[in-house]
Amino acid sequence: METVLELNAVVKRFGDNEVLRGVSLSLHRHEVVCLIGASGSGKSTLLRCANLLETVDEGSISLFGQSLLSPHIDPDLVRRHIGMVFQSFNLFPHLSVLENILIGPLHALKRDGDEVREEALALLERIGLRDRADDFPDRLSGGQQQRVAIVRALAMRPSLLLLDEVTSALDPTLVGEVLDLLRDLARSGTTMLIATHEMNFARDVAHQVAYLDHGVLVEQGTPEQIFVSPRHEATRTFLDRVR
Image (cartoon, rainbow, N blue to C red; front, side):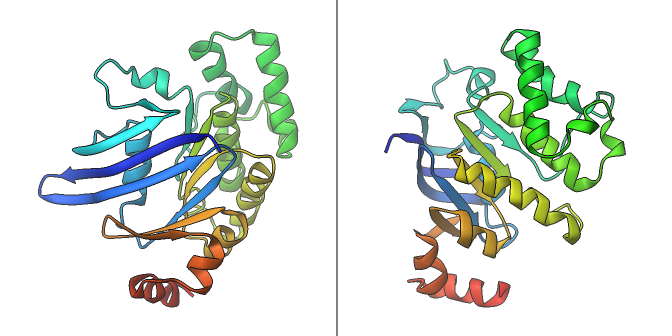
């Protein structure tokens, strides 16, 4: 399969703190890779490096074989191909749900307004929020806001979707509706790299699961390999703890 994203021996430091310690990871088209690990293991930093929100200190990152670390790369152009959804929603509070979705395709991609509006309404219909298109974010539940944030990223037609603990800020009763949307996206072939604490979700949806511990990618494999017969003691200890 075509390689979409490749990280090779990526190191990221914040002062004396080495947050990523030589992480190598590949993601192929239509593949879902879930990053698991304790808080502070480096999952969010890895996603932020992949989206050029953080600069790496060593190693390389490429998208479809093109280096993203070249000084000639425009990060804004890269982000048109890599969508990112954060745990804190980050919707624009002064814009309606529909306007939040339209702003990227209209202003960044310069696409036709009528076409974009039709696509946006179809996406809202898909997540059951077509009737909330004109509402402002503060009128929605946390789960609804997060689903809108995911749809906003999808409206940019990204080649790759990065999701950073998108359920961690939600009330437990709202987590399921967001995970159901991600399951639908996985079934439809959306390429995703997901940092998550939801082990059952990772087991059900991921093609590959990668366990990070203190900035080290300890092991990577299929869900069955990681959750049923992990090779490393650190992985077994982590899974026993979260279970």
